[in-house]
Length: 189
Image (cartoon, rainbow, N blue to C red; front, top):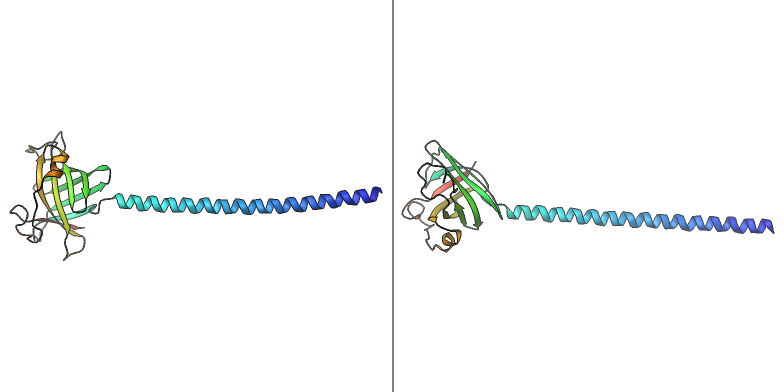
């Protein structure tokens, strides 16, 4: 009888170990599945974050050679950097002048800027310190990474005043459609 009891206990232990190993195996598989799911969610989240980040960047971000109208010689380098929800910068660095503006908002085809309030637009005679401007822009269809732009409102007391300004420009007339002057052009370097 003692032998039979021993055999039953031994069989029970083998069965118990076998069941536990199977449970451990299933638990490991479940953990692996959970880890994969978490990793996939993390990767998907990162992709969405990257897509959101890219979507919030301004399409004109970059370094450009700047021209007036159909000019072919540039001594001005323009730097543009902006992101939705943050102030950006538009900086013109030329041999004869320099100017800088804060980009406070942008949409497709319109940029709202503000002259810095302490020293103005980085030139000594700025009488519009802290004032707002409205710039229209569009892609140059005859050259990639090239854009035309025209300041249609400047020196406005507030952003809402700059937005409300209805002054337009004629994009079909590059030589004099910007308030009687040529549109300016920037070509990405």
